Amino acid sequence: MDYGSWIVIGAVCLIGEMVTSGFFLLWFGVGAFVAAALSYLGFNFTIQFIAFLLVSVVLIGISRPFASRISGEPERRAVTDRLIGQTAIVIEDGLVKFDGEIWRAKSHDKIKKGDKVIIKAVDGVKLIVEKKRG
Image (cartoon, rainbow, N blue to C red; front, side, top):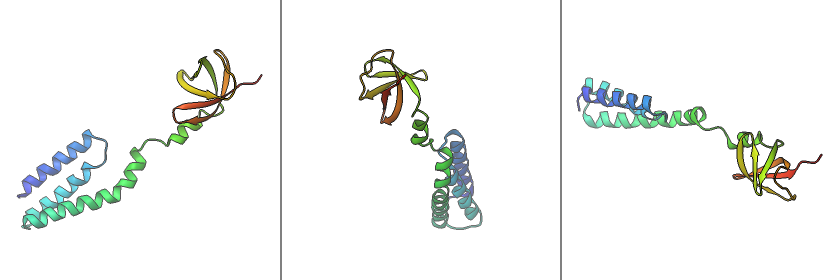
């Protein structure tokens, strides 16, 4: 394969990286540019292709932990921690409203519409609540 084809492949990968947020195609673009340089220097296609794969895979392996820290979602625990200890209002049996959002809720206490409750824990998509005293 001539170096022009590798440059086109590299450019397509870089443009694809700009469109997506996976931090993945960039390394295939770099690998393609390395293969283009080898093609320009006269190496055969097998060497070019092996270099393309090797450079791409090594760079992906090195960058994945870094990329997942940057682009990953925040830990769920951090999101649910802000709920614990907050006050919600019972809007009907098994449903509470907190911060404008409606949540399913479980309680060992007898609670009814209009009661204020304290969020004690989060169990999946349900809040564990207890009736607010006083």
